[in-house]
Image 1 (cartoon, rainbow, N blue to C red):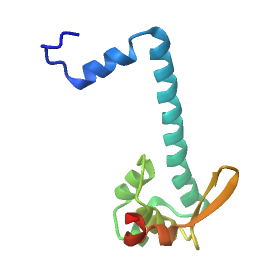
Image 2 (image 1 turned 90 degrees about the horizontal axis):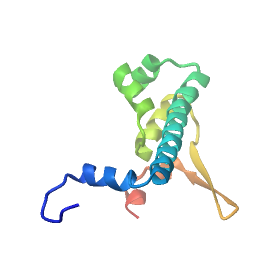
Image 3 (image 1 turned 120 degrees about the horizontal axis):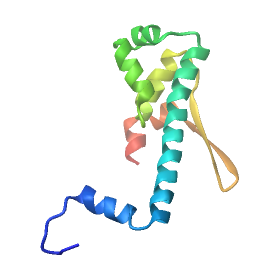
Image 4 (image 1 turned 60 degrees about the vertical axis):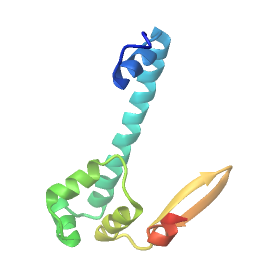
Length: 122
């Protein structure tokens, strides 16, 4: 690439990704895994709602928003703790928490505490 010529970043990134067939295949595999993870996340919110026997419209009414906003929330790739907490409470969850395993140890995070503004800033 000519150092004097301006090349948009996306073009530079495409050149890097596609520099070799092996690299392009590896990046494609990573992107597919990310898509699968995102799809599983979206399905989980909808699955929780379904398990609670609620429609998107019913969740929307409980949250004071439109059904389309609930649909968008279920499709989002990420979400604030406070938004997730509101959604889960609207679906009937009691004491929602996040559970992770780090170095073989199970750690539970109270979602209500994590959603507090002073907690998130720490």
